Length: 225
Image 1 (cartoon, rainbow, N blue to C red):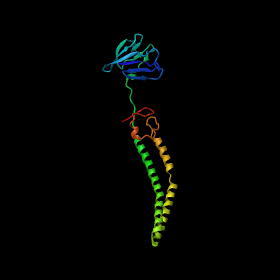
Image 2: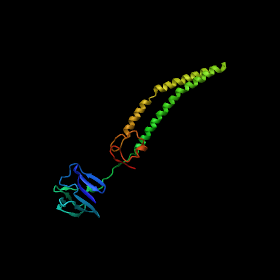
Image 3: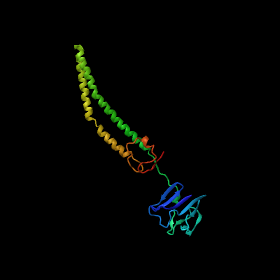
Image 4: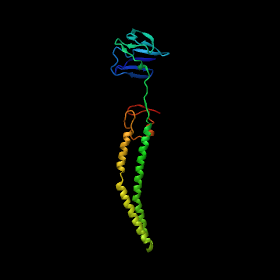
């Protein structure tokens, strides 16, 4: 059985169906002569309902005629109270649950991760360039001290190679724009990793964790599974 009446706080139409409570319509739209529990509606099958006044003082009209209890269908006009508040049949329908598909956010997250990983790998390679000259220089020094005289030129070659590698490493560091790239990647990610419904940024939450939630934390729209 469904109970229909006025929400005393917001003056919206309140529909109570078992444990489910819903408010319908804009605030202050229901007249005060509609009581908090005005009528009950019980399905009679075949698209018909039995509408019943819940209080002798309540006034209910079906097709302009005052009733106490009557079988009605969606073709009938139901009005509550002496103000003739029109009861919309849409109010009795189960509200449609809107869902959104956030599958595209998986691609955005993967592209963001791959871009950051590429920068980290490049920074790691530049770091390796800084350590290679040290090893070459140590090897050249070892040859200079231990090798026979005819091998000493090789020590100078190693030293020269170390110098070239070191200079190349300095060049790579000087021309590296990882910081700027990361900032641009972050801005692009923040612009794209948003709820398709409300446009709020979803944060730096892994997509696999994000999809475990049922809905957007901002607009509460359900995720399509």
